[in-house]
Length: 442
Image 1 (spheres, helix red, strand yellow):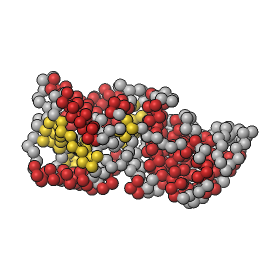
Image 2 (cartoon, rainbow, N blue to C red):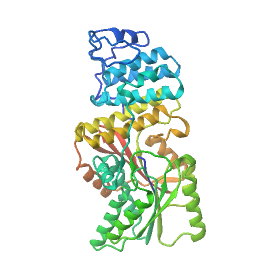
Image 3 (cartoon, rainbow, N blue to C red):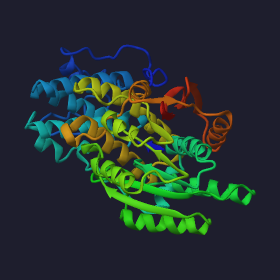
Image 4 (cartoon, rainbow, N blue to C red):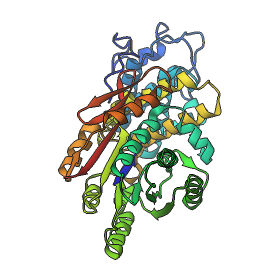
């Protein structure tokens, strides 16, 4: 079986004022800069006069900020240096990096647009501006220790939701098997495996059957994608094996250097070779977490017992920058809104959390080709792809749903759970965040 954790809500009705933006494009960008009724404070931007005698007003709800970002992205793509610099100046004044959740979100997109302009050669005058701009602060992603990452993951249900749903499905699917082979392609460095080991050990203590031998194979990613660990995959494997041994579970750990950029070809070849040499071992269930069409077709040939897919429910795949920006803006407000509920300003964890979001925003907006690794797809597209590849959904039983609900009860109000067909969807204030699906070969 396979297990994959990669970790568009509707428009931001809970954030916006539902009134039209006070700016009208393209003719009023200059009036925005000069109109004392629209701006209430300035931060200097080289090349533009900062006149502290002119107040800079309160326009800056999420709807207005999105319109500014869209207009700026369009100007950058059409190489309109004057207009893009004017809008960037406005954004720099209304979206401080230490503001409210909407302002911090917008600041992340401002940084990303500046990075894109620098990469594409648009707005060459921005180089001087960047040196003193708050938006030019380098994104410093943190390298976590195992303990830090475990604590970090436990802060919200964002990852725990997928872990809990996947583990419940795995435990049900492997019952009666002597061994379970898990292929883990998650980005959270096997953080769900300790909870799976604990669950297996708990069943043994309750008088259940001997737990299966756990064979864990992971793709040793060649890209640095947050969250990042401060130890190697080999060191991680040793810690997981020792943890399993402390719970009287046998764990075999294998890491195959492989990348999503080539469809995890090294991993697939390794799995095929294992099957060719050893055949299908009696009593071994294959469990996988899996990415996209070509890879899924290869996985289907391995005849997995179960495939569990948990991913963020958004669409970052458009080749059109403006469409991608809109999708990202209308999804990534969620983590900024969430962080205000559980982490104080100035805390290290909050800095790490928001640096990872900024990294994602910059990758979605500023990067193209193989460098753009953030290519989220919505649940509906995954469901279509899984069915076309020869899988059928098996859904989640009531016991699994109850377990997920119990996990959500440990967190702040605002989180919710709903079922869409056979799938589970984690929500924040009614907006889809992460989905979990379970599949078997047809």
